[in-house]
Length: 225
Image 1 (tube, rainbow, N blue to C red):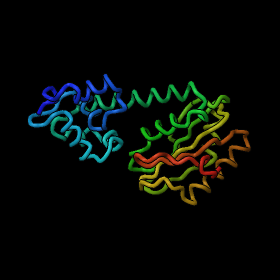
Image 2: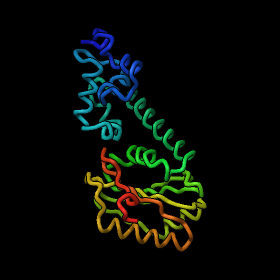
Image 3: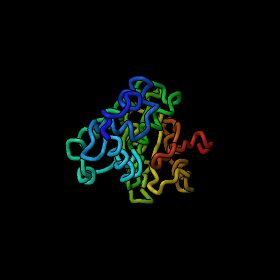
C-alpha cells in the first residue's frame, strides 16, 4: 500500500510536522528522504529494506556509491542526495563546535565523531584543535591504520598543534572491532601525547573512542586523563 493511502495521522511526513522528527523511527525518517517507493513497496518498506541490508543508519551512511546504487530503487542521484544531507549535518555540528565551549558541549563532539568515524573499516586517529575558549579551530585525521592498529607519533601531534596555535586538543580514534573499551596501548598513547604537549603548554582535554552506533567513550569521564 502506498503511503498516500495510509490514514493521514500515520504518514511519516504528517507525523513529523505535527509531533517533530524525534518521534519517527529510523525507517520513517529515511522514508521521508526517499520520498517515493517502488512497485510493490512503499517508501517505508524500501527504507526498512535498506536498514536491514546495511544494519544501521551509520553503516548506510558509510556505504560507497557502487554498493548503494546497486540496490533496486536507489541510484547515483539518491546516493548524491544522501551524501549531501550527511555533509550538511557534519558542517552544522562543526559550526556548533566553533561557536561553543566544547567542554560544555560534549554531545556535539560525540555526534560529530560518530558521523566521521563510526562506520570506518580502518582505524583513524583525529586531532581536534581548540582555541583558548575551547572552541574548534581545526580538526584533522593525522594517522590512518589497519583494522586493529595505527602508528601515532607525538612529534607530529605537537607540530600540528603549534602550527594551528592551539591552546588545547581533543583526541579521537575509532575501533572497527565495535568495542569502545580502551586498550592498554590506547592509555599509554594518551599519556605520552599528554606529556609531550605539556612541554609546549597545550592541554589535553579528552580522548574519545568511537565504535559504530555506540556512545563514544570519554577518557576524561572514565578518569583516564
